[in-house]
Length: 370
Image (tube, rainbow, N blue to C red; front, top):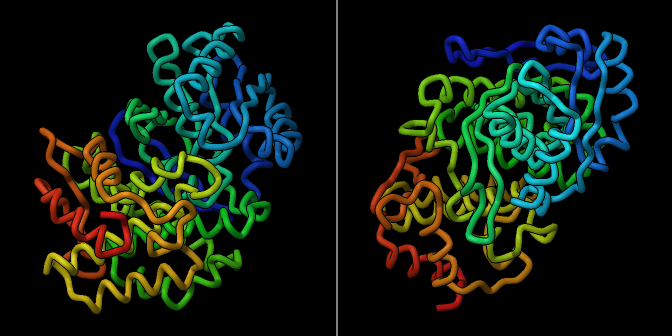
């Protein structure tokens, strides 16, 4: 049983299909989007070893010629070097603009492949087949593609919408518990930013989601995708409401930069800590109640995710360095800091011209070096 969530973007609309057993149906679902029956599949070594043979068999059963492009796993692959490598290998396959590219993996593969597709011969169609919880509920939906640079995360990229997203819940069975927790950070984000009822549901059912209980997992993924699809349809290019999806990311990206984008701190872990920091900063500024900040922090911590900087390898961090990273954030405008802050649980807002000195003082109070 599967469920389709439409992303309403007019002529560029597409479906996010959520369910079990979708990898086995991938060929019949993807084939209509190809013109010559050729499909370049970009995946990483870990995902390809786990799921590559079955995925290839399903595609070939539908008459598709599969051309694998396998990359190294990890955030470091989402770089200028990684982009050049994937682009060159796509060119070597002599793909034309009537062919199709598939991103088969987690958020790194999806972001990298989507960006490569956006710039390959000025744009080639692609589909997303996300295999992690984080990618299924967040990065595979909405067309934001990017790479990291030494100056910050996701600072170079493009908006390039996929033709289809297939989110097979069975693929999550091979994830580590740590990867499930990292993905859950993006699930709880939707409750915190705009759906208090969903937040309450996660307080009661979060452990079932993390344990991959089928009904709870299906609801969590579907509700997350519904919320993101609604926001993307309203604000595709992040000129307004879509910025709310960055709750926790300004703090989180700064922490990722300080830890080197490596295994010490996964993206979802950084976002989790960033969300807790955003709520506590909101409370410190008198924007939301201390009780709401404490409740948000407790819900994140209950999932086994970090909520404080001293829980992150490499702490203590330097407050001035963190603020400098935030100044490079893609939401910053005219040198002014922009944050997603909260008025209460389930009600986030875009705060422009945030005082950098107030942020620095808050970070010192939270344990950063002054």
